[in-house]
Amino acid sequence: MSIKTDVSGLTLLGQHARQPQSPDEAVLERVPNPHPGTRYCVRFVAPEFTSLCPLTGQPDFAHLVIDYVPRDWLVESKSLKLFLTSFRNHGSFHEACTVGIAKRIEELLEPEWLRIGGYWYPRGGIPIDVFFQTGTPPEGVWIPNQDVPSYRGRG
Image (cartoon, rainbow, N blue to C red; front, side):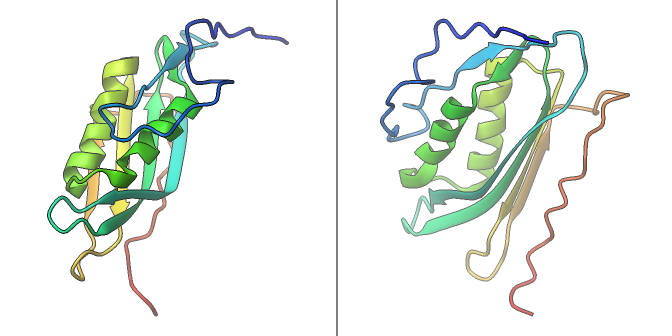
């Protein structure tokens, strides 16, 4: 079975792309869902997400898990990778990063459902986990647990 995906109009896939300097500069692209009308879950995991503390400039680290049930569109993965790495030199609190990522994807795709778990490593000895979802998960779709353990430190 061969399903063709329309990639016309994409500016990053298959091209040399420079790293965006900020999330606002980053281009997030989409491709048509090859199975419109079929409910399924798409998951992206970014275990080495980084951003900067907006006050101290110190690096912050998180493990992000993004799940969504698409309608007509899928996020193009190279553009998502570049979008996520655009936070490396961006100062923003954990909550702003996590929810901002979700809202940007939601705006682009208009998915049936979306959730993000931001599992942040400790800052000042306190880990901060941030969760966002657009509503109740659709019935009949297998949506696995995120299974990211709470931070327990060493031992």
